Length: 355
Image (cartoon, rainbow, N blue to C red):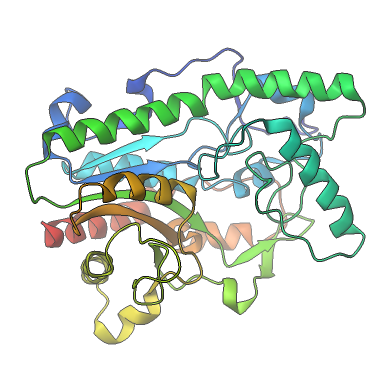
């Protein structure tokens, strides 16, 4: 349906088994690896792919670059490679684009009311109002650069058809992901030795620029929304990870310990580490982190919890791919494996420091 045939589709009715979504270093699979796991990495936005069930509802002007920029697609390659390289890591990947249902948003009781509200707010925003889409973007019909993804239905028959297609897609993708996340965390917890640390990481990436109409990703975000050179950790606290108005998803001391290990693993010293890694700025953590953080808090162990990790996408992509995306276009660069291997090696080194 897309005008240049470039979008990334999953064939209709494709199902995903647990083994399709869970990645670890053990050749025998997760069951044999589970007792060694201390880091569960979740990829709610790791896939950019649309299920073919939604093809009639996708805006024909959408390009692959817009489709991929809408997602955190580099975290798929990163999460899989990290899990393959570190026996203490398991990675769980959502197979569908966040368009189908965003696992990092509170689950809506019903999808259509939120979608109707989103489009209503969007019309007001385009009329000049300052609008937030918080609370109605579990299914987000536009990219974060404002590019249309879903077509707004013209009548009630169209709304009903869209609702049915989204429901079918949810069963195939996001619901399988959520079940896999729960199963992995429950099994790792069941095998965890008393007193051992356990981190649930919700893995994300964001660029410090947004996309221009011609596809060039060059529009700078406001300073308050920009990520540091490497990564931001979020536990719903302040700039030191200490408690604010919301319950922490992992203790401040443990999050600082993780951040210090990552700084060392990536080769930052004490002076430069503060510029490369931030805590809760600009991202404090969202639904997935809060959800699993609350579950893990029941263990009453400060070394166990959940944290949102938001990488600077430019750092994960590398200089060549970033330069390509700063030019007008509709394509998306391939993964720079050598560059990504360097990122993974640093993460593995950080993991050793934490054990």
